[in-house]
Picture 1 (cartoon, helix red, strand yellow):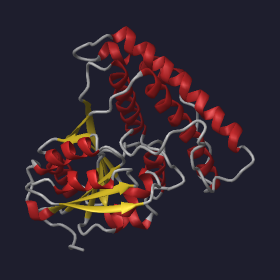
Picture 2 (cartoon, rainbow, N blue to C red; picture 1 turned 180 degrees about the vertical axis):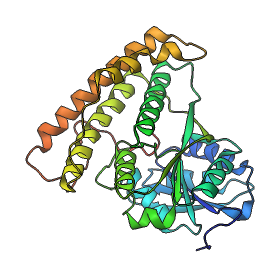
Picture 3 (cartoon, rainbow, N blue to C red; picture 1 turned 45 degrees about the horizontal axis):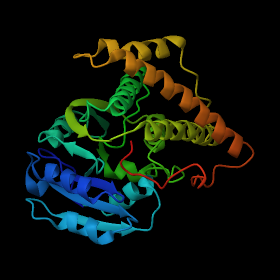
Picture 4 (cartoon, one colour; picture 1 turned 90 degrees about the horizontal axis):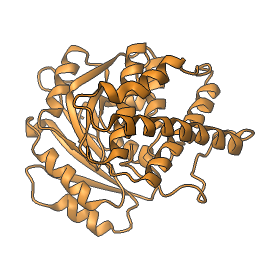
Length: 319
């Protein structure tokens, strides 16, 4: 592994993927356009048991200015995939994104500038919804951004796993992502919580921007927020098991400001419809929480594999 950076930090970019070769190819095309010294970053793609492994390999093998190193694993979920990529990384810092994300050219420079000032920090970037015409994608991204801003201001950060960077050694020291989260939901919150509990620093890096293209319909929107609720229950249980205390319910003003957030957006795009979807997301989130609590109330959280009757396969790009 390269030594700790002094002038130009080195990054290992880890991209989990599952059954989305076209989106993966677009992601890697964007990574190839990153404005950063090519010898100071590498790309590691972890195929989480895709049905068409050849298509994933072809997406990685397309001619580009950078070479994508491909790792395969049996389908185990995005948390396990990211951990596998981190285990193979050669650089001092890890940078995580997803196969449905397009990093902007100055993405790594944003993280590098922040890490020069705080070399031991967990850094969370900014995410822009690329599908503004899709009401469900728009509402979902607004919710994630709102929650991220809220918790950063409260001193207990939550950085989505599709746009974060941190020292590899510290990531491994605290145990990486908890693989008891099999879906793309909750594992990033739990990692950030453990990081914060150790007293390690965190930094919000608004200049490290990715564009997210997660196309949703009503059914997939509901499923996504159901999974968020289910993951929230697992998070609460795991936190209790390590004696970290209970998680407080957010005050009423948190939800009032969330519902009003679409009206503060510039430009405004269907704010009433977006607010309604945000209310719906919170109702479904609560339903997911209580559903998971009913399933697991008396069982230890030793295995959080999804219930086949209610969950689809793990989706590394659904955060």
